[in-house]
Length: 268
Image 1 (spheres, rainbow, N blue to C red):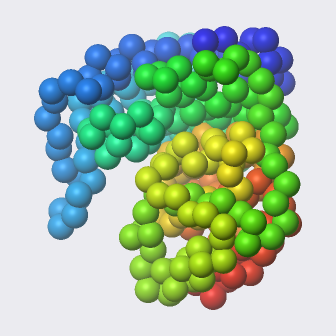
Image 2: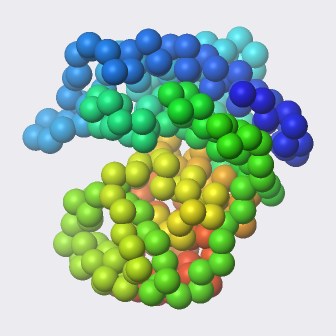
Image 3: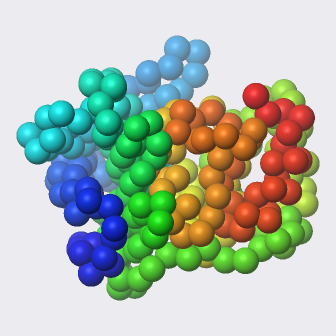
């Protein structure tokens, strides 16, 4: 995997490749193998595995060795130096439920905030060998289809839109009512996509992702990819997605405006 041919403008873009390789080496020995699954959520199911923890540990080690002045926020091992100008935001396996069931729809999310704003991100899927990255100004792909620039597609009407969400059960109360109203108008809705849904919007294969209850490590890596490909990613109120929460990602800004209006009654 090499992103050098895509000429990204962000100074830390080449470092994404190194972090993705460290995560791959730590995670892939466990995929589709026998391992125990722990539950992090009392009264529910929030799985974590040895692969999640090993992947984040490997990336943290490299960051601390190469950029000791940078901060890190990770899903599995907490935070350090969050007041730094540059903070790496890591989710070693976004889609752990897919991972533990052998589905290749999970990905390693590697994001960077600069002065609190998402500035660089990659979704790496080592099993299928796909890498989606962006720096808010451009977005690029490397994988079985070769190297190419990512570009969202035109879609000005909800009735023409293909939409993703991980599951409708993300939404509670008024959120579910608002979400259902959006889904009813779309041409097609697909579930269970996790981080891959956002990358498909960036690649021009779909038009919209609507989700809720997300954490910073779920979204920081994805926002620069969506924006670099020409799309828009915000909260349901139209604010920065950096802190997670209720998230909308659209390939076409016109569609984004329509969806925000429909979700406004449940936006927090």
